[in-house]
Length: 86
Image 1 (cartoon, helix red, strand yellow):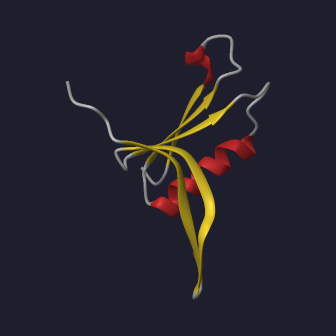
Image 2: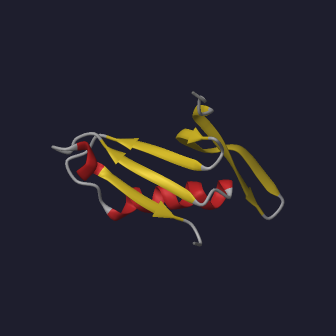
């Protein structure tokens, strides 16, 4: 059985014109440099949470993200798939 490479609290640098901020944003989990998993525990997931994940996807160049809300009655109802330029 093969293990997936997961990194927690990954810094995503922001580059604006010639200014680089190394700790602009921080993704919760990055899996195999292919999926960003953003973790929440909220009553309601609002559009700004999806936009936050989309920003992380754009900054990292990763195409797929999962927004996981642990405050849902069923975990499958708390997972939202977000894609970047597919």
